[in-house]
Length: 526
Image 1 (cartoon, one colour):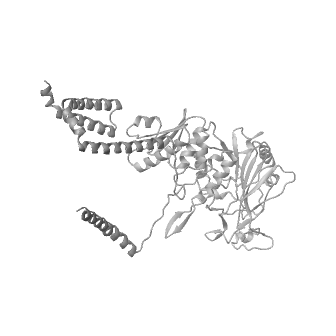
Image 2 (image 1 turned 90 degrees about the vertical axis):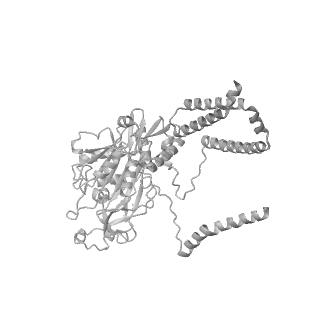
Image 3 (image 1 turned 120 degrees about the vertical axis):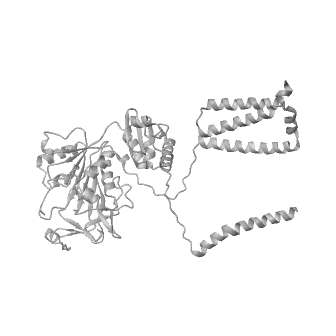
């Protein structure tokens, strides 16, 4: 019986090898459970054991031969190398030691993102819905989410193919490929883009229990967030809603006493009719009770140069004096338009954070001045100013005739264009005053110039400035924008001679050196 079975020993070895190869292929394909793979490998071990049993003499001879001894040494070295690599991989997976060597720290999360993740009180899960259409985008978002998860154990993630799990995509109301859903308990927030700012803001929103409400005053000809035209704020309203703000209109004349209890920020955007004294009293009382307000008052209309908003006395109580002028800046005019000053230098403040390297422009802006208030418990900070060659034009007739000229009546630059004031205390009142309201209108944000015969939209920091001011006033400084990081690009430009040298040295020289070294070694051993 043993002799008959020994004739099948070679087949037992072949079956064992085939089973192990099949188990390895299935493991790489990830189509079978680990239990099934273990069973398959175990059966292979049984068949190999039968081969060893029936061919023991042959196996012993092979193991004790000279070749086997040399092979065992090589095997020991190989196993040791694999063991060292395995230990290093284990240490690398357990202890994350990383160094971003790119110039712009492209692969490093911003301090704001890190702080938001560390401040998470409850678990947040990210579910990224990406199909196989764009594998690069899927890999990029997976890498970024992995970086997030390394900051805190309260953040987890998974990447789902909505085509493979359509019911899950339906449950999460996913309509677009590339949507990342942030989930905390029953709350969900979608990020339609996978950049760091979109993901971080989605985490921030889903981790908050309340939604700040921003009220825009109406009834005085103000710019409206509901207006889609060039003079409207509909673009900024959409951006505010994406950042978890609730936007409402408020007519102060309809109030009987105080402002709504859910107000986070009051915005006055370019009034064209004066506020009544009773309305001003309501705003004053709100600010005196630790309120927050963004007041934007542009230059007076050319056909009504004596226009007053009715807010001058209130602003003076907050150390701000608004001049009745229009700033002319021939040095830093917007593409030669001196009545549209461009600002690219900002003072240090939370409102101007991350604006370094950005430019903002202000059509028809008036200047303001920070004035000392006796025994004031409030701190006023100038945010930015016009250039040293600017002036505040007070002759509106010359402005209407488009021939402004500086004279002794005009205040010489640099002129302050915006300021922030903060009271003292644990939850202090705050206001931001800007001498312009059109800088975030739909028309300004969509401003275009002609380059090479084609219309291109002007890139500016106007929206970022408004967003920073809003977040500071609402106490949502964490939401201040995270600038996008550009991938490092260091192109190498070679001359024709250099290109020829690189080609021939790699195509001919290196192979020739290897060939010569091989010939020398052969000659010595011969």
